[in-house]
Image (cartoon, rainbow, N blue to C red; front, side, top):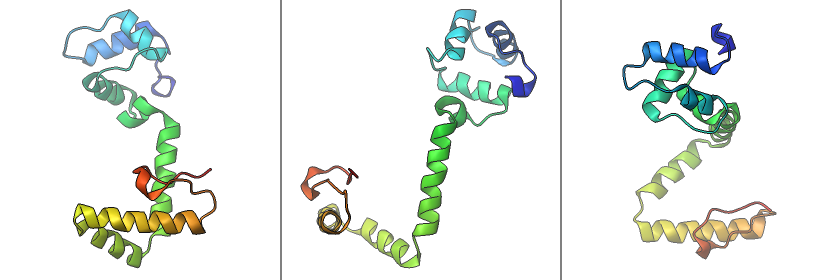
Length: 131
């Protein structure tokens, strides 16, 4: 709110949001809960709040740390996966489900043997975990 030159208060947010919101008016108590992380606005209200505050709706809903984690994960994939791996992933995704399961079990078995800390078993159905 401060970045948009708005006083960080429930009454200001209620007034500014209400001036833009075409639906049923939002009570001050509801706005207070939003500001104090006791409630999350519905998706349509979140979109309007994001416009008002000039923020990405995902950032508003989940916070900066989630976006940073997503960017780091995307960077890891962008930098760590070359053409051959992408070609392999594409071929894997085109396989029928039983063959994908078999290939997944083979990869997890190799990972369990060769990658320190991988604890998932191929039969578990869960992704490998680092310990």
